[in-house]
Image (tube, rainbow, N blue to C red; front, top):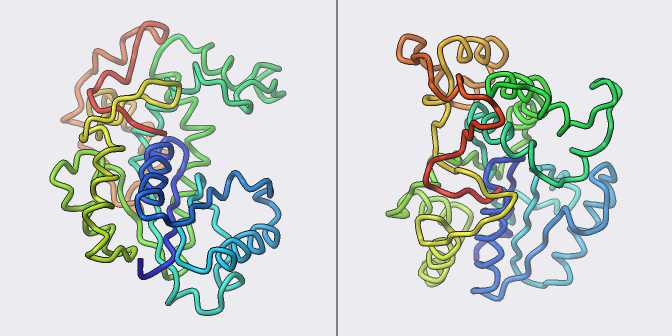
Length: 284
């Protein structure tokens, strides 16, 4: 490894998948691995996180892999004054419309603590109860768009690349069966040619296209561009009205309304509809 490797994701952008992949890489190469969300230091404690990362790297005395599930990395200049020559990172993004679809299903069933806290803004309902109160999938998606999805879009757009991160689209990796894009990404973050075979094998082993098939609360459909099947023209217009500039900044097409017919999935009752029927499992 040429650099310390930083891997950042966001909610429903392949978080569990990326964690699984890079954890496996760390084991294959015997490289120290740090999950920044599991060090017992609050994200609000910026200095504490800087110190924890500094100490981890110092104790390792070699290159490391660092994972952050919300892409909330500390100021690297406070970790290492020469960070631009010592670090490389990837920032995983995903089409926010697909995230909204994924979240509409996931938030209705997940056990994450924040989903089960009563909130005054929902009349005392929890986030999950409010999600489940809507009778149609379209209503669920619009609810997510005004709440969790809105926060996620803001985070993806506002991410500070610190001159070492590169945005990587989830869509470019999830179906990369020839591993062409994966190899380019791994080369960018500094894996040596002598390491590449082991690293690519780890990616293959922990990806759906390599046969990895898990089931659990975090695993829903990982197929790309689900919104083209789920969104009708009216929903696409509503979403674009909310996030058109952000979609453009992230490099996602706005979609052509005339190509989006009335989707049968939107007419389904939310309790029966499953927006996650595509074949590729996602690790979030």
